[in-house]
Length: 223
Image (cartoon, rainbow, N blue to C red):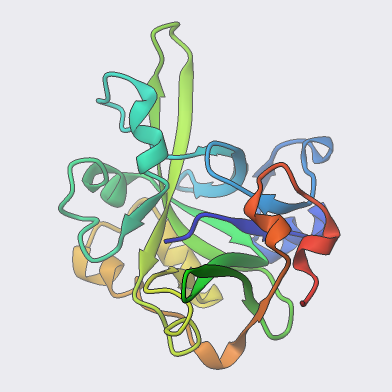
């Protein structure tokens, strides 16, 4: 699964790297070393003309849900079955998004212990992870915009760390995923594959990352 990640960059670079035409005010952006489910996360959609950057709450609530309790169980969607599950099928064809990251965390089992690992690109570059979004109307009438992160089988680097990894889309494939006109299941699912492990590294970090209350630069330092 993917349950924690980081986004450490400048607002200007984020806009440039993902070719954003419309975005929230810069003052609403802040670096984070420990992004967790239920938080508002930076996300990118395409409206048919422009790439738009905004915030979505991490934990998908399908539009047809009776309440928001589902969200905590919907932080990830398996790419293998995403086009079949009622909770994700509609969004798979109509509401796809990209979630910018510069690293994510996974916990490697060592006997009874779980060792936190940070996984990132060797060149420290940002990358975009495939996601889905939906809008749910709360009893108060408020529109709640939520999202989920797609996962796939691990690449060679992740195999010894975890049995899943987020779907990282190569830059040249991101526009295909975001384009609302793309409806072909075969084309879409062909994008949902493990990322090239040769471009990535992983290292152990502090167990401080286990608590969502911690959010400081020392969380990403190599142990």
